[in-house]
Image (tube, rainbow, N blue to C red):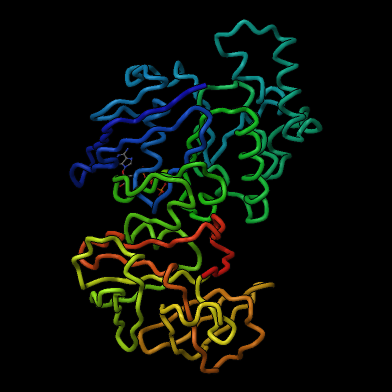
Length: 390
Ligand SMILES: Nc1ncnc2c1ncn2[C@@H]1O[C@H](COP(=O)(O)OP(=O)(O)OP(=O)(O)O)[C@@H](O)[C@H]1O
Ligand SMILES: [Mg+2]
């Protein structure tokens, strides 16, 4: 049971090219039993943050505490954390059973060898690898090896689980099933966890809370739905959600009851009550999630409520089963939409997309900060479904 707190932590490295600030003034907390995902592009400081939590790297500034006790000076092996990395090196000459029990034997605990065997067998059963216990790592598949690596972390019942892209080497199918397993195990055991990935979909599906990093700086800390609906800035908005958000430069003017938003070749209105009272900028960037776009012909419910209508020509339809990603050309720029009514259209056809004003994102152009996010509790956290209720 551990509450993790990182306060004003900065990490600098000396490198031949000069000093590198890998993590810059980072503060965040992970409550007891919570699953935090550190998300961001390559080089943004995810691994460095995780290594500082685990004690493999020392902060240049700031403090890390476990349950309000400072651990900066506590050695990694005394922090009682278990780490699972991408290259989950197992000991090749040991059997799976020995690999699983090794950490426990080495640890300063009062367990008898019979107790260790029992713990190892329990964990093996939990992970469905009981039949592998007598084998050596070389004869296991990638997924089986990763399961053993997880098992090695689990048997110790640590205060914290730290995962660094643990599923990166697995195929897509296995990734999905393993990440479900990790979430189930973590919530069953109630062990506070920090999980690094640059895969936004993975982050959205497994996290209680996501921390988005960019160039070593925290952009946003929030629940997946908050990050999706209320991204603090354009960077976060474009980093989460798939396909990418459609964005357009626009001009916004106050017309009293409504704001008028002018794109290059079209304009639409947004009811003033959907925007904060103190908007004082006219240069904006507007964003539309592909899942929020509807074919105009089939969205009578959206019509009559203002909001954009985008005339476009269908370029490519990529069917995905029950829905399709449609790429279209509009005068204002290219549009990507995820729609279910794709059987009604063909490539080359002229169509109109509409979007409810509630679902339009608006950012201040210069600072890229969010002015208006996406309203509506109807969005699933992965953003793959949406129903317009206006
Ligand atoms: N030991 C080191 N010496 C010098 N620079 C380092 C060291 N470790 C990390 N860095 C630099 O710090 C920055 C953050 O690196 P980090 O490994 O934390 O990124 P990351 O978010 O984990 O990236 P990736 O997704 O590629 O694994 C990078 O610019 C990296 O080059
Ligand atoms: Mg990394």
